[in-house]
Image (cartoon, rainbow, N blue to C red; front, side):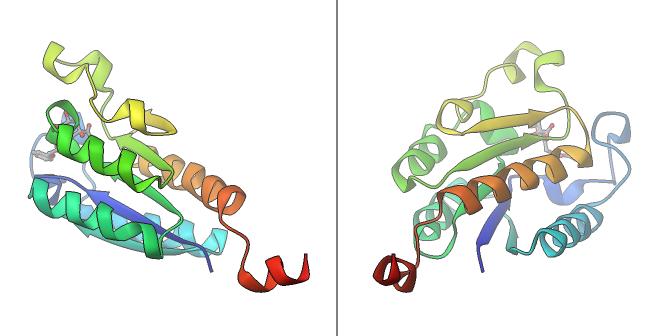
Length: 157
Ligand code: CA2
């Protein structure tokens, strides 16, 4: 079974508690339920992690290559600052999809630039929780189309 890693960046554990006009009313548990239901429907496995630590996110991405065929990441504030996360995604070679709840291009100038976008296959921004569902759907397509053939398929093909 293809597996997809979903990473929620810093402060996303606060979802639903504050700033509902920007980030919506659903909490992170509701987002994760939607992701798990989408993964089940598409027949893929999903692992979901939230971290407030840049180095931890870098290590998760570094280890992901062995076990996951695609990555969905909301780097949150690190979107705008983290060369380390950008380099980790690029080095991993895992097809990645960047997601944002809010439309980062319609917000403060410092949010309008993503250091992460150039190393991702694409970005979904501005659709609230739906950004995650669409991002996961895109990641499923990438995981299915780009996954290495199994040893058996190579032998028989
Ligand atoms: O729109 C997004 O998904 C963001 O990645 C969210 C980040 C923000 O720094 C990015 O510019 C855009 C913020 C995540 C923190 O989420 C909160 C949720 C509720 C209350 C406070 C923060």
